[in-house]
Amino acid sequence: MDAATPQLRVKRLRAVLQSVRPFSSPKIELEQYHTAADLAARILLLAQSHGDVAGRTVVDLGCGTAMLAIAARACGAGVVIGVDTDADALADAASNLRALEMEDGVDLVHSEVGSFCRSVAKRPRPAGVHTVITNPPFGTRTAGADVAFLEAAAALQPQVIYSLHKTSTRAFLLGRAEEMGYHAEAVAEMAFPLPKAYAFHRKSEGSVAVDLLRLTREPPAAATAAAAAAAGE
Amino acid sequence: MRLVTQNLLTCQVKACMDTAATPDGGFLSYPLKVVPDAGGLKQVASPFDEGVAKSILPRLDWAALRKTAAELGVAALPEEVPAGAESDAGFLRSVYALVFDIHLEEGNLLCPHCGRAYPVRKGVPNMLLRDDEM
Ligand SMILES: [Zn+2]
Image (cartoon, rainbow over the protein chains, first blue to last red):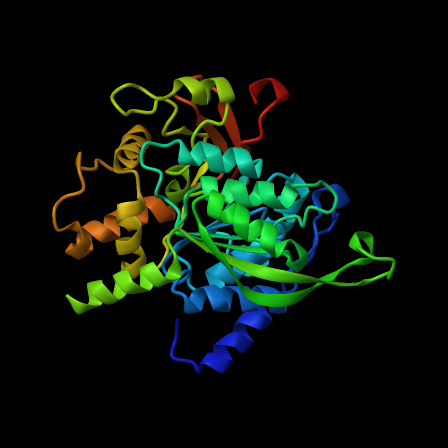
């Protein structure tokens, strides 16, 4: 990126993301809720601070309007691919990319997410993707949809996965992540604003407490030790 | 969709995936063949980024990229990534242009194993399966 101060970069990123338009025809059964611009900015800046974005190959699973894919590209990701099963969402994503003149820097793939990940992983040399960033369904309409996304992401065998989940499912998902061969931790807690249609409670509108989970293929301590050893050579 | 993305995609048809692996480590349903409609390829020069070129090189399936480039007639790549490629600016530039600058806008991705065609419209490949293909 450029030499602007960190504060200015954050401001610019937010301005870009605030221009991303929400779903034109959101589908409740797919739990298509728009990721708020400031949440997307926080997620990507956090991923960026771990070195997981700039120059990396980043896949946004269930990309919807492409909010996270756009944020990744704006943070300097080298390759960005958004995958979604819904044609209407992809049309929204394409129009958002065009409006930001990013259509040549982000590829969209119309595919069921699980099938995409498992087929890509079947290739003889599967290590194509460094970072997966996803805001999956929270699993409130279809039980297990959240875990299915995490399993799909893990099947792709990236170095790192960032995924948003209801805080109430934290202990369960951290356990499932270990079973998938990833070390997981909740690296941020956020309030996710939900429109009326998705309200979990009787309140007409509100927000749900979510965790940003960061899954890595080895425990952070071991990775840090390995990096320190490599640097000391 | 650019060749950097096509380099990841394989056929999703279950019966095809189940029979694609060969004893010698090959995978018959990969890479998907790029079959553009007339005028369906778009060339857009993107600014060269050496850092991205270096990071992408080890992540590409080179044999698949070589095959695709030959099928499209856009580049004749060496059989292996040459030694010292990471510090060869000319080589990095040519690979960068190959994987980032050629966009399949309209056409098909064709499975070389089962023949399934995945249509590409407005640059987006449609990989959705019918029920009897899952
Ligand atoms: Zn096939």
